[in-house]
Length: 367
Image (tube, rainbow, N blue to C red):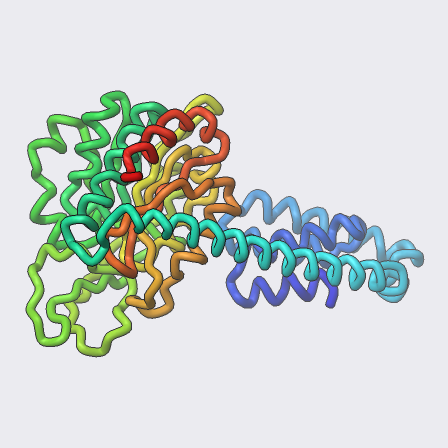
């Protein structure tokens, strides 16, 4: 299969970044093949990159006119010259990607198993002990934020904004954005005095892997039990259980990368940001929409699950794989719930800087 066809398939599936990559490989293999530029222009246009699309179309027209006047650049000659090379390169890349994916999966299993052994320091059958494990993790996150001094903190799935308040008090120079997609929570907490006192930007917005409007599902009853309106487990996803009633609302959603662009948030090489992701099964969506932000992120706490509470949600191994791929090191976890817990990651760039804190954190565990 040629890279043009690969790009076409990605384009059909709506995977625009992958389609661009495939078309660009085709262009690298044959810079004179005008059709690759046409297809590249189509996908750039779909992404809204109009100027880049026009440049691709112009290049395609130039090459097409040139090839029509040059008998050496017919389609048959191009196939004869490049098809075998393309097939060999594609096969090699496919095999390499499979091997890398397998290694990443193995690594995530090893790390997850290792971190799970921390449970020997807690009686996880006891709720008080599980709560204590969470408090230790949160304190460690705050201490690490104090050390790394992020310029921005994004509290995604903020609920009542308490985490943003704690981070702002610990790092007074940080600019905090707290995102809450549950309209009931937002209306209840939007006027907290601390938000005004600490200049915390508390917004009614869902952070996801696309821009637009989404359905947001607020459970009102599970297995016949009525739930409080300010519940913390509402989600962009519906729950696996069928015995769940919802209040479904519409909420604006945005990629974190695009939110930063639209709000003129730019970081230089000496600046960093921190993320807190508590979005009930939708963590992968947040990560997929924050590729540029991740390159500037020093510290992440993310809630993950090992059980499929929500339809089509990515489980802990998948989240860990994605963050490892983006140069994040899983450092520790809590045991707040048996199948749902929080993982703390530090960007490899900042790991040496944090080693003293890490040693101190683990020294607190019982021998």
